[in-house]
Amino acid sequence: MTARSHQSGSGISFPAVLKRCSCVILTFFALVPSISAQTPAPEFLPLDSAQPVLQKIACTGSACPAANIGPVDWTAWLQKSDAQIRQRLDTGEEDSLTNLLRFGVTYTKEYRIDDEYLVLYGQSSLVNAFAENRADDLIKALAASNANQGFVEMRAFVEKKGYSLKTPADRAKLKAYLLANLARMQKEFLQLREQAKTNRSQEFEQRGISLDSNLWPDYDLDLTLQTLLDSGKLKPNSIRRVAIVGPGLDFVNKQEGVDYYPPQVTQPFAVLDTLFRLGLAKPDAVELYTFDISSRVNLHLDMARKNAAQDQPYTVQLPWYSDGRWTEDFRAKFTTYWQQLGSQIGKPVGPIPVPQGSPGFATRAVKIRPEIVARITPVDMNIVYQRLPLAPDQRFDLIIGTNIFLYYGGFEQALARVNMATMLKPGGYLLSNDKLEDAVPAGLEQATTTDIPMTTPPVITDHIYAYRRTP
Picture: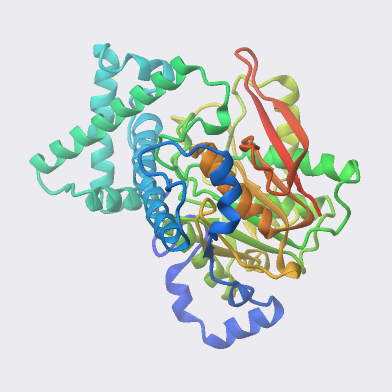
């Protein structure tokens, strides 16, 4: 990532928010009406709506609701469980920090600790040396006075955890913490590989909730929406209201070490770009909400909206590892998608150069128009236990959740399914690359599945499950 004074790396200029007069904001939103003022506050899932799940699906763990729980205790249980899920963001941040330790290239010249090396950590003196040196280099980068936005946020996180960068003794404690997290990640990796789970859709239910993201799900969604349109299941200009669960905040790519660009949100913009290109939505009529429990994500999008009111665009970096072991079909089709991504919502600009330590990357960048950014409204909401109380004409035509439901078990997925069903219009669609628990359909029927083979052996195939809200 590159440091930019007075500016977030996604094109967000903080001082500029204070420099322009309020008349600019009023003028802008006269052209693009603010929808946040119309957003009702999230409500917790009522007990009567949850009863089918309570009766049919076993809750696992030490903190399950009683079988005969009453409304008051149910609300108390929801509030406590919501707080527990939000605490998992902390471990997710540790995972992002550990990914930075493993894969980052801007602060060190050491070899990256890929999965093969991760398995050998603690057993190989060579890998141990990589990790030790990387930890030392990362601590220097976190302590640097000119650290970029991503490193500043990681520094704030470790300080919140009680670590300091001031003295050699402080840095030694921080190094021990970094390496302990690396060992924890190794243990989790080995456990997952040993279990060889066939049900990917609940694979991370014991892990922290990470904000990291990439472009693969957006390409998968593009294919699925095209299929739904071609089959007549979706009609032109039929999508006006969209919700995205867990849009993510990308900082360090987990596999190829692209930590050179600042934190950014891409999925809402990629989805809008697809909807406009396919003619499924009109740019001057669509409304997009994001549901997230992370204050970092919500504040980031809120600042982007405020800057859009000042007529400032939002710039996204779009690197992809073109040298990966992709199938030829996937490589060709993804390249076409990637080359046109953003054409409906902005214009290409010069990207941040890929560092020499990241060979095999292609990259580009898009500057997104302010009126598109203003179409996005972030909402602090836990989809497992909360929903928006919407009038029938305010319900969503499309809800999207990728790489998020696998953090929950079947009981939690079923509750989320109930919440999303109540927010969808009849005939509306929920799209996810995680297959949801279906013992309680909640008015959602599985309509189609899109399978996308991505890599040569060992083959990785991604899936998008399309659920339709029945009348």
